Length: 255
Ligand SMILES: NC(=O)c1ccc[n+]([C@@H]2O[C@H](COP(=O)([O-])OP(=O)(O)OC[C@H]3O[C@@H](n4cnc5c(N)ncnc54)[C@H](OP(=O)(O)O)[C@@H]3O)[C@@H](O)[C@H]2O)c1
Image (cartoon, rainbow, N blue to C red; front, side, top):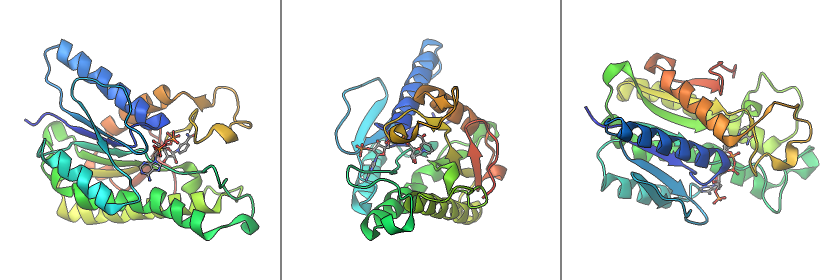
């Protein structure tokens, strides 16, 4: 049986970092109980984080650059033949120069394309290069390999009541379609893998910080709480559930 290795993309973001920390705690617990634990590969973008741990390997990756994605995965291939879970936690909602649009007059081509590149295209490019490592993941105990991306409920077309946020909403809807498509292709060509897009809740990170004003008490999650919930949901997913949009509580979200 292979030990399960993880790849967390965007391991320095609010949710990504909380997922990495949770996996490190799980690995430490397993080691203490004489169970072997696998490697945790995590990627950073602008700067290498200063936290280190046994079994944690940091790699640079800019998801807007296919060469950078390929290079990071090549480095992983030098250290292992298999990855059991891939979780892409990268996302863009605002930049120092652009806020999400309240109205069409605020739409700007460059910001729109940046959203599409980072929120929608990246997961497809990651999937393209990571497939050989997922193919060799262990599938004992009926547990599928996982290819998860953090999406957002606002990417649900049927749930859209408020409008606005054209670039973000459209990029998350495009991500969702891309992952649905991938789940269909991989159901034919990759044994026992679950492709899933996830809503993490409203989480207290720099991404949501400017928009937390209307969040009701108790509805703003800590990154640690969201990470724990997301990992638990992923641990219960089956290969038959591949191609779904699921929230932090395990509830399926309509497209
Ligand atoms: N927070 C929420 O309430 C909420 C709600 C719904 C959905 N989500 C989704 O959850 C995911 C995680 O969000 P978060 O709240 O944790 O946001 P966050 O703290 O802003 O993290 C986003 C991460 O994306 C990375 N990133 C941005 N551009 C990148 C690029 N070109 N290449 C590689 N990495 C890049 C950032 O790294 P650098 O800073 O180094 O660029 C950062 O690590 C996102 O997909 C977001 O849309 C969040």
